[in-house]
Length: 253
Ligand code: 13P
Image (tube, rainbow, N blue to C red; front, side, top):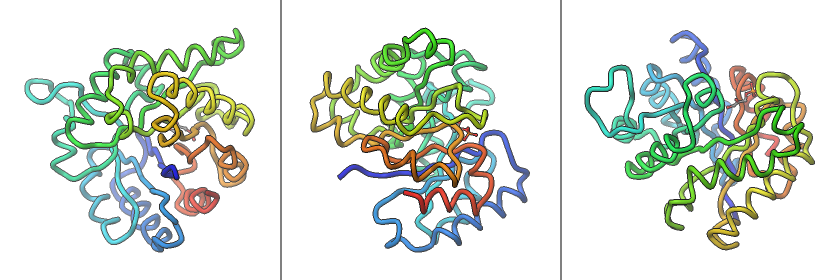
């Protein structure tokens, strides 16, 4: 059975005290490991709050992730954070290739391949994001476009390496817009992506990779979206800033 996962992406939000409150509340609400039934719950917090958040959730099943990492191992890269640093803090997850990084920081598929490599080298689980713009969808090229993102950033990996990755499909037109992909659109893309992975790595490996959906997931639509047979959880932005809403989304899985 595939791992299920619900991850909150706080993006560049919360003051330090708000972050402490939110992390503690989520940890308190997601206390019962048995109820999670193998689902991982992750909060991807801003870099400065990582160690505090990790300490606050330490007695709960909640795990902490970073929202980005450098593609370089170490050295004179002012302002960057390496995956070795994250590993040394025992941070298990890192988001790679979010559309906001691709768009505002010009991160391309090649750079994201390098980030994925170094995250894996340091034992982190990449949550690798992919997704098309509205323009690409309206032109009918969305399947090819998203498959190409996987090909160019992930298909150099060995089967063993690929098996350690979580993929998040986040259509750009659904991020922060309140306009979610329909459950059918999400399932359809996830199925395509799994078939694309199977074409390169075989069905057994492709079937084991969690594919999350992200883009305006809310307590009210999570259950329907997560019902798709290839939808293994969610990457949640805005709704993860509210502990009750986020835990309701976790419960929906
Ligand atoms: P929203 O849930 O706010 O649409 O954001 C989705 C997202 O970008 C998660 O990474």
